[in-house]
Image (cartoon, rainbow, N blue to C red; front, side, top):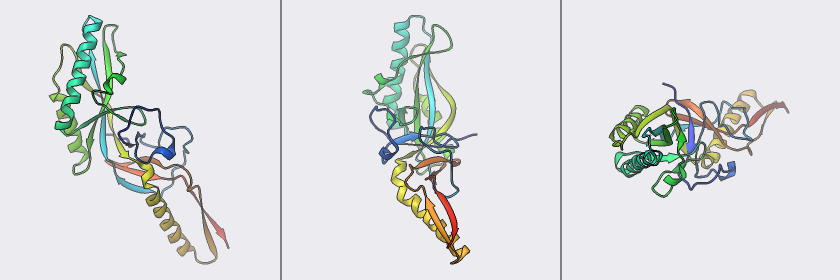
Length: 232
């Protein structure tokens, strides 16, 4: 099974924040690197590897009741039931492509119905998150699947998984100091090996924190720095 990396934190419904705002916000990333403007494609070998905070599964509630008004009522009623059951089921609900917003009764109205596979079929997409603290990826995925099965259908509305699960990390920018410490330690090791005839120069440490998958349940947080070795 393929897992993607992600980083994010619960926040109000706002457009994607600038990198300097990512002290607490929750954001989603791809398996190789973040998909965001102004981020470098360059990924250094040195960074901070850590366990992700959440396993995240995209799901959809779809309905095909012929009457459009009744169809929407059934889909939104099932969504309301999912929101009510999430807390006591050990999962959280959210939505968003990059920065995630917590899904609550107050924010549920932000989700719009989308056309589904047929003219008389519509759906609403959102995310189910299971914390990885204290459990494996497999256990988190099992919790998500139990929750999906437990939410009762309303009329002809039903909930289904979509795509593979992703990972998330809360507040990637809060790890900047720890990332720089890893980079500095690696640079010192290289300088010690090379000896006093050479100097090590680091550039790019002012760049935004980026993230990528480094294994099942694990992400790499890094800064796209460059290390140059120069004769003294």
